[in-house]
Length: 105
Image 1 (cartoon, rainbow, N blue to C red):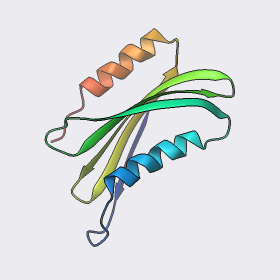
Image 2 (image 1 turned 30 degrees about the vertical axis):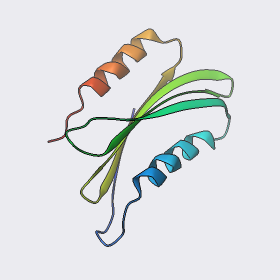
Image 3 (image 1 turned 90 degrees about the horizontal axis):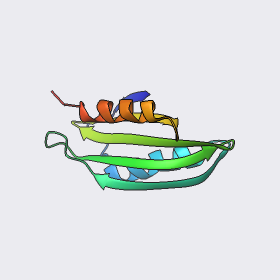
Image 4 (image 1 turned 135 degrees about the horizontal axis):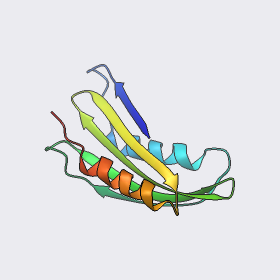
């Protein structure tokens, strides 16, 4: 599980689509990553601009699934990512519970 928040000065405009693509590229370019596929969809998060990325990859031959939520709020970019072995059904259930429980205050 990865949770990250980056705060930017208000005079620096954030390009959300570039941030999403940058996040995808960061995963794809990690050492040992191959067979990478993903889908990106808009996500409803309390009226905040958000995208959810669902992907599969191999890292050093081991198959993984991941889900990542990125959202902009004020002048900050936040992301939550869960990655697990592709055949781990308990991790898949835990991931779904995490993403189903996310709320912004």
